[in-house]
Length: 100
Ligand code: SF4
Image 1 (cartoon, rainbow, N blue to C red):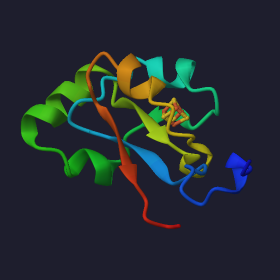
Image 2 (cartoon, helix red, strand yellow):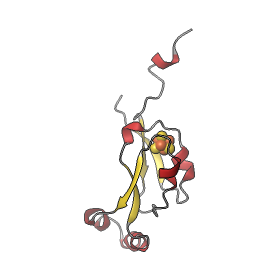
Image 3 (cartoon, protein in one colour):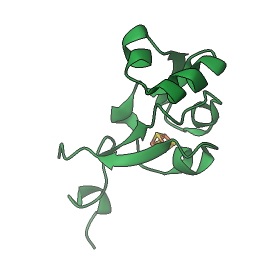
Image 4 (cartoon, rainbow, N blue to C red):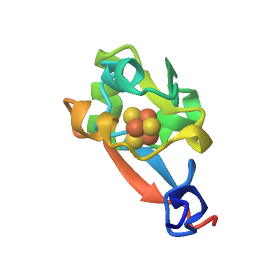
């Protein structure tokens, strides 16, 4: 029987990474709490990130202290999908990196 760990079709860490919609994230930190691989961390949006948002999203971000989640260790993502379902704002989706 073939070793599944040697199967090149098997997902490897970093094959899929979380993408966070800056217009939806409200900094509730559910992704930070649920990710088993510590992919996420919280920080404030910097001025460039704030200025990139449309007016209403910028206003909404300010209501939440510009506090948002960031995928600081995307290479550790195992594509389990827990963050996607945990986010109450539906702000996270997994995207294929195409790096392998
Ligand atoms: S899919 Fe799983 S491993 Fe990847 S960031 Fe989300 S919770 Fe973490």
